[in-house]
Image 1 (cartoon, helix red, strand yellow):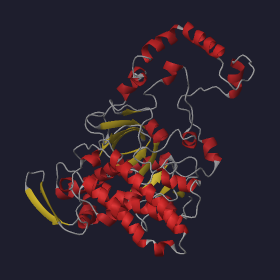
Image 2: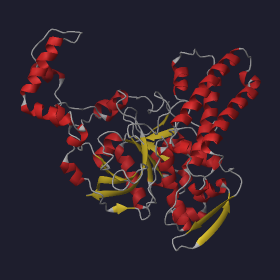
Image 3: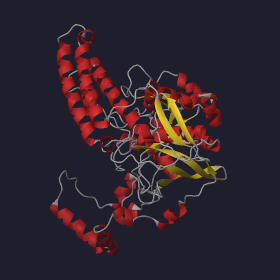
Length: 495
């Protein structure tokens, strides 16, 4: 999985959190990644007054180049950074030494093996199933276990296709070039998704062990599948809009047309991913427990998922009901302690909508620490490509010193990065440990889904400062937040 690609995006316009509600948070929450950036006034005083020009002058660029290369430091930078990976050259050794895989608060069972989403945007499915599997491993006394991500992937694609066609029928009277219509057409069935969409899939279709529905080639390499379905759905959208414009009641008259469209999508999915188990029919799961004792379990996918909120499972997980987890989000563009929702972002029509409780980072981190102390893993969403290394598995704003190499300072706040489209949730992973000093978190242990060749045998470490700047979402148990935060779920959401 390319770290620059997104597991969360459903479209360029819908992957971000809702727009800001107040500038107060933006103005009060300005945090520089590199401190000391000069003000506009100071910058102007440093520069020789020159007439404004709207074009690029060749003479001026020649002067800039002469000034640049007069400095030996810049000639050294040119030699090093033009012939090597700049981020590798500018990696700070002190940060690499400081960000160790040592933690004083760690869950006993982290889950194994390390998973690998390969060339797909299924990180959210991997992160969620890596959380679910811990509960299942405790219940069934397993040494290693993996749930089928491909099973949820199949049903998610089918449900998203239906969700898209329903949205097209909802908006058929909008102009084709209207912003909403273009947003819907931009990415009808993205690989990415959100926690609430996971909850919908598990509730409707259940879960199965990976051994009963393993990854096909197209689950691991999803580009062709996504491209084919997207093309077909865009054709469907054009046809539906035309037919709807000629009908006094489009849904009443176009039922068979839409069903034929969905049958085409189902055919593509079955051929490229394989027929999935029926959610209501029993499958046979054979496994060995930690003591190498053989077991055979006959159970339907829906009943297998229901085990996550059985009394035995809740007891094994310290009183946590996996099905009751909900999303905290840190979006400083919006007021805190508000319920946020992204309009038309979802997968299963008529089920749970995608919502977030917006909180400050202290509230979010306190909930995470409490969960880890109660032996529970945490699903979280972040912007993984910023100040991070796939090879070392380190995520830290101090990891790469761009100012040293290029004499440029990068100083947008978290809110400003969101507003300027410089940052967004692009990846989901799992927290399994934290190192706390003087009651404050220092670094966090992260289970990724890029295989054991990334990071430290698949494990990453995130500095607490990186969490402040680039983590946007955590999924928590209601018992680990205040009543005031829980009450936010009762609010009418802000779109």
